[in-house]
Amino acid sequence: MIITAAALLLASAALIGYDYIAARRDLRASTTTLARIIADELTAAVSFNDHAAAIDTLNALRAEPSVVGACVYSGTNLFVEQLRDSSTAPCPPSPARDSGDRNLEMISTPIELKGKEIGTVQLRATMGPAYAHLRLEIVTIAVILLLSAVFALALSARLHKLISEPILSLARTAREVSKKKDYSLKATKGSEDELGTLVDSFNEMLEQIRERETKLEDRTKALERANEELQRAGKMKDEFLATLSHELRTPLTAIFGWSNLLQGGKLDRDKTERAIDVIQRNARSQMQLVDDLLNVSQIITGKLKIRPQWTDAGTIIRTAVDSLQPAAVAKGVPVVTEIANGAEPVFADAERIQQVLWNLLSNAIKFSERGQEVQVECGRVGAHFQISIRDRGEGIDPEFIPYVFDRFTQADASATRKHGGLGLGLAIVRHIVESHGGTVMAYSRGKGQGATFTVQLPVPALQKDSGVPPESATASLKGLKVMLVEDEFDTREMVAVGLEQSGATVLLAASGREALRVLARQTPDVLISDIGMPEMDGYELLEKIRSEYPPNMRPIPAVALTAFATEQERERSFEAGYQVHLVKPVTISELVRTVASIAKPTALLP
Image (cartoon, rainbow, N blue to C red; front, side, top):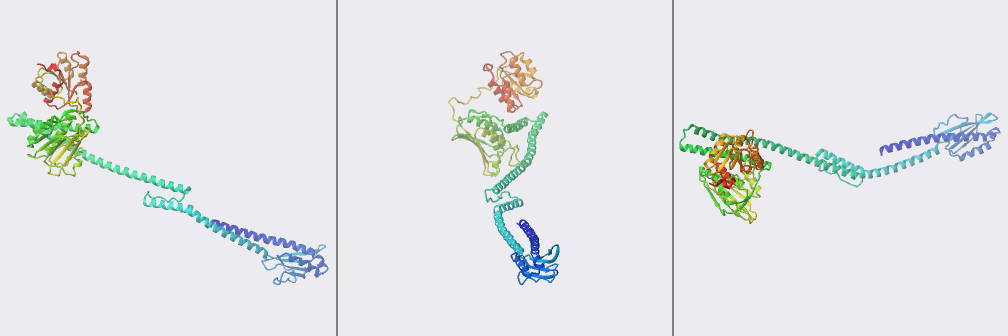
């Protein structure tokens, strides 16, 4: 508005100035013309000195409002004059060069007769009419400017409301957002036009920035949590390796020490039996540690297989309790078993459920003091088979119960802890039970109040043709010829002695090639072979027997006795043609039962 008003004022001033100059120029031109006409008309009157005729001629000038005075001179003397009114100054006695008034134009024209100047006509014209026109023009321009200003103010007020205010509101919102870093603020939308679209776009941009800010914060928090998890995992790894080293070295120390004492030959009968018992117990402890590590590895990779079948509950419970009875007796912890129905059929992987019970019972015995009883109760509860193991030992802090089934987690992980272990047993328990579709729960009133672990397994509808497989009728290998292929001398000798004590005739081979030479001369009833051997492994050995040897030897029952304990190796041994996959170390009684179960029925006849 200011720029426009200044331009209009400047233009108006230029226009008025131009009109003023043009009006003065036109006044001079018109007055000059009149003066020449009057001079021509007065030639006769001046030459004949006729004053009356001259006055009549000058009276004609009254029709021209701009002429306020006319002076006619004869020679240098005033001849006649004609004045508009009394306010007009009289004519001077002789012709004047200037009127002395800037508002008057004085035009002098000579009166000539036959080329000879006989007088002069001087007309005085005023700028009054031109000024009146200019004043009207100025008033008109002022009115137009005023109306324009009012219209401009009204228009600017309207435009301010429609355009400026939304833009200013948008700018204020942008300043607030920039200052407070609060992207949840929104600009107010006042219309649906282009400004409304601009406000929508601005608000949408803020929303996108807010979402990105939120995602960035979430990612930052996730990275912080991941960093904390990495640090915690690193700390757990260090603690686990330290614990693993401790747990592996502790039984090795006992085994190595008692073995040296036995080699010395200075122990009496009682101490010799104790040495053997200690060595066996620590060997089992190490075997359990290795089994736990393998089981956890299989759980993490999703390769721990569950092979459920119908079996009776009593057998599973009694087997687990019997396997831990020596440890319970040695510590003086009585184990009381209450089985509601020993013949209750359950659909489960018997070995895995025994592993669950073994872990829970060993924990109950480990955390109980001498004389504190451990109770094992089992029976049908609705559609579930429930097993409860209750001890009166150290108990569990209620705050730790939610974490009791986590891997590598122990209530006391310090170097001064009272009990050993890797913190894997209960994690394996939970995975096995949940893989059966069941649940496992822990309960304790607190420290010193004992603990109760409850396992519930679903019992599906029993099929008519389902039943519990009978146990082996005999564990004797009398009359059975067994081929044992093992590259480790100590293991080969120990297994051979155990088989011979069960009545079997044992053929020995230290390698696959030696086994093939022996088989070329004799035909055994059962083959027991290690897998990992130099030059020719157990897979290649069995493949040659199945493909190259006489038809009567090709279907020979085979047992894989190996330290390869993964599920992949187990599946591979079955694919190679082995009927059974046994993981070292294995008890002689288990090996004997396995050999007896796969041998041809005619081979066991006396």
